[in-house]
Length: 174
Image (cartoon, rainbow, N blue to C red):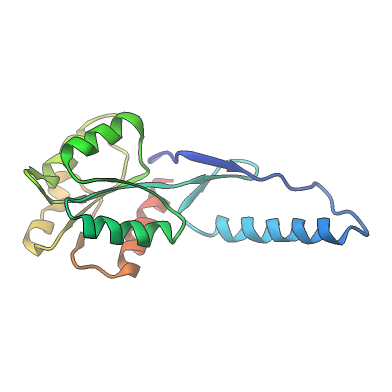
């Protein structure tokens, strides 16, 4: 059991197709196609029936540019994104939401993201949330496992690397 997804969207499909009702049949087949595509995507969690739960990612970095870039990458791939630029903002977010995954900068202004990660993993409420530590300093990333992070990512990064790491950890957590 990993993190829990936050938002539920329910789709109702007709139980049977209606002979002679072209529009109804077309709409039904489009919904079935949409659901099949969404079920093959790891950025969502599914519950019994046709409920889709959107994965929420919390991006924590003191660079507004990096937050904007990561937000664009993630939202354009169907994720819901919350952001924080400091430890204080991170803590405030965690009082109101439990994200499905956290992308956390190691060199956060005035704080060490690795220690924040270790503290979160020691807390029973947050211990199952996958955390990816990020840094431009490869030496800092080498110790990510010592701080109980689930993965690490160097900066700069490729779009595909971000999505592969996020999708991989969400699949493991579900």
